[in-house]
Image (cartoon, rainbow, N blue to C red; front, side):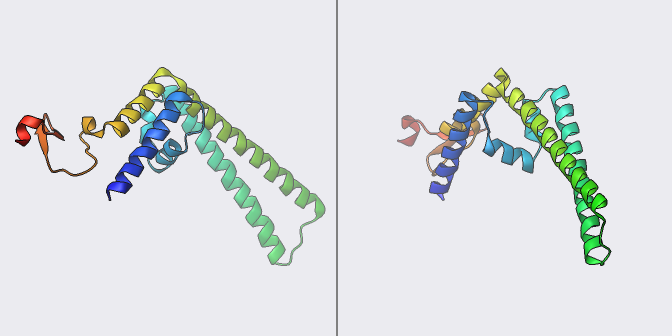
Length: 166
């Protein structure tokens, strides 16, 4: 159990160092957390960036749904025995390409907005705070390891001083 905690702390510290050193680079750990729980974005997005990100996300989903609808239409026509003429197949193919390109464009906008927000000083401070939390977890009320020998100080569990252990 302690090994898992230390491994998680090491992964968190590595991700935080990467965020502090290269905030515009891909941040897979943060992306995974944001995908599961979008609220961490509010730590470093401005209102305009949040609106742009949400708008791009909605359009990307819309294009994905339209492409799925066209694929379903083509599949249904092929399985029911009604063959589509070459012109219809060409049109569907053209729309699918267009939707794919538009979706890539929206994903690009989302990535650029996210990278720009992380590159601001606030994003770097967020990364440095994560480094501090991983390296010195007791300062955030988390102690990795045994709870034996801990005392409560201002709502945090911290190691006892030598005087209190005697």
